[in-house]
Every structure is written in C-alpha cells, then in structure tokens.
Length: 224
Image (cartoon, rainbow, N blue to C red; front, side, top):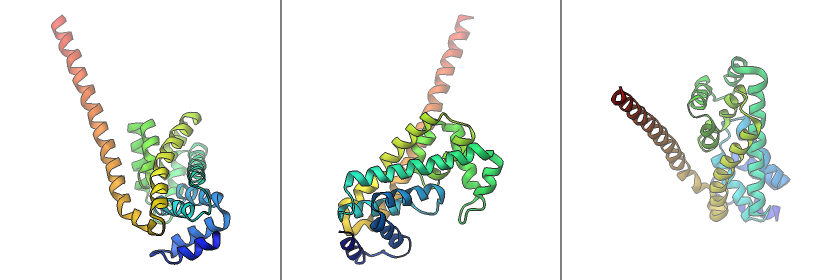
C-alpha cells in the first residue's frame, strides 16, 4: 500500500519540498514517521503542523496506517516534542533559552518574548490553548519549563490541546484525501478564531473581577 501512497501523492497539487519529504518519511516509517514529523514542529517551529497533520490524515486514507493510529502517533509526537522543549527551558534557564531561540532560522526573540508573556498572563490555559496557535505551540513549553510547571499538569494539558488540534487537521486530511492541501486555506481562519476566543475570555475574566471588586467596595462603604 505504501507504493500506492506515493503514486497517489505524486498527483496532488503541492507534493514537493516539505510535503514530499513528510510523505516520504511516513511512507517509509509509518506511524512513528508521523510522530517524528509532528514532533519536529516543536523543535523547529518553521515546520507547520497545518501542513504535516493533513498529510498524516491523507496517509491514513491511503492505508499506510489507520485513522486511529494517525491520531495516536501525531499526538505522541506532539507530546514528546513538547517534553523536550520543556526540558530545555527547565535545564538551561531563561536567558540561555532565549539566546538559543534567537539562533533558530526564521525565528525571532520576540516570538519567545510573546510566548513568555502569554504564559505569565494565562498560565495553564496558555499551555492548553497554545497548542492551537502558530509558533506558540512550539514556544509555550519553554516558559512552562523555565517556571517548572508540574510535569503531570503539563503533560495532561499538552496532550488534551494536541489531541484536539491534531484531530481537526488529521480528520480533514483523511476526509479530503488527495485534496488534503485545501486544509491550509482554512487553517489561518481557525487559528484566528482560537486567538480571538482567548482574548474575549481574558477580557471577560478581567471584567468579572473588576465588577466583583466594585461590589465589595460598595458593600464596605455601606457597612461603614
């Protein structure tokens, strides 16, 4: 069936460069190959999961592995990659971590700074929802490691967030088959929805806190 995958893949619109390499790895290694590719998204952020995840779904539709195996291996790759990034932050600290990040091609120090600020604001929610935002899904594990977030908590949040995100794109690739590349057109919209939802939730939380404080202040003044 693997030869069938490559034959079918050769007919798709964008099977060159990274896409061709990803299909080749999955064709040769099966599920573990999908885990390696998705895990690389954590270690080398310019590799977009919006590309490789639909390809994993496409590979499943061609019988290289089952749909369930595609979800298992891609999520395992996401979690293992996140653990490695977490360990880097925990072991070498903030300043050296930031210095390492600036040496990654196509990555800026500001990418790390924004992830750090987001983690400082949102904590656990940043780790969970950060799996669904470009670049943040790679970098959010760094401040989690630097701040030594509990490993069990980190693993649970990372697994849930990764599984949700992976399911969306693997399913899309599986359903679209050779038209898997059409997923990319909707990926940016979905990511914007996630970011906007986080912003709305944050401002709603702040508004509720401010209103509750005002009520407490008013009650205190009336009591006096």
